[in-house]
Length: 356
Ligand SMILES: *[C@@H]1O[C@H](CO)[C@@H](O)[C@H](O)[C@H]1NC(C)=O
Ligand SMILES: *[C@@H]1O[C@H](CO)[C@@H](O)[C@H](O)[C@H]1NC(C)=O
Image 1 (tube, helix red, strand yellow):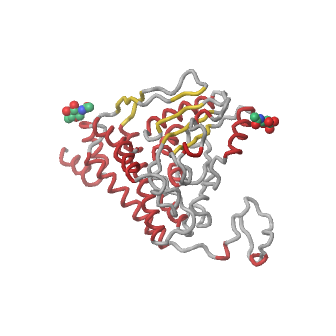
Image 2: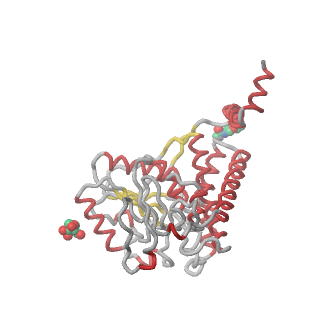
Image 3: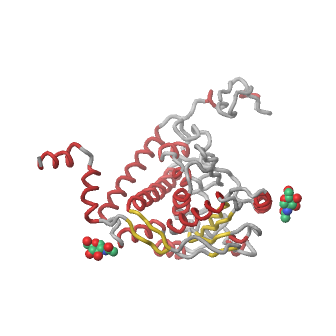
């Protein structure tokens, strides 16, 4: 009897079953973590300053952040190898923002974002394969290879846009959303730099969480996935209970330059980047929390890292070899329904028919 069971665990059933059995003995199921108190604006109470983190959640967040980190580093490499052309903005360093956001809302909620969106594309459900193939402009890309870095979409996710909280418009939007009491969370992912200008050189006030005037705001440690998750849950409750919009500033950091043409070291020092990496890297912080509290151990996390590396390598292989979309398809999917294809000044394409 015993022998049979052992055979089942190690041979016929997958490894995780055995791992699960052993790990229940050696790992904690959940822990309570202290998180930094948020700065509040026009709010009497804010998100909690401690929260429970389960082992399953921790493993999931760790893996997701590692996938995004590796995917971005791969995109950097493929850009330099000229597989990727055009615009490309990487979000490594900011992983706790998209992963924490997704952990605090429901998949049925809607997200719209500016560029630097690859991480959100992944947390919204797109595969690494379809994201990298979109970056290389191939058929298997999530926008069929026609959108590239700034134009990726999926269910309840509306991209990927070129405009970043443009100064005038953002205030008009705050006003209208407050007037109409819209259930909307505005998120300012403050990575400390505009393209190449430090925030305090460009903004008379850097209290971004207060800039909605009548809209309540939170300033959140955007390097801590749990802080982002709890703040997001708080903000979502605020919206769902009919109190109107809320604004969150997530304080984070961008490791790469603004885009691929910016090495990112002419307006900040290498020491600054290095110091953020060594003191407040979002993946490192979660990793330490997990190991110090017996939620996981070095070996298990190494295994996840190896798995992630493999997944990203395979996706990159696909993105480099998948064919480009055919020229005849250039006019397809411009419209949701089926109007005749007619774009002003584009007569030479008129011979192509459009499919929706
Ligand atoms: C807010 O929006 C309303 C409606 O469009 C407009 O009349 C008003 O001037 C706006 N107020 C501010 C402060 O922008
Ligand atoms: C983690 O596990 C080790 C060995 O089982 C034990 O000595 C240690 O006290 C545990 N630490 C925590 C924080 O639970």
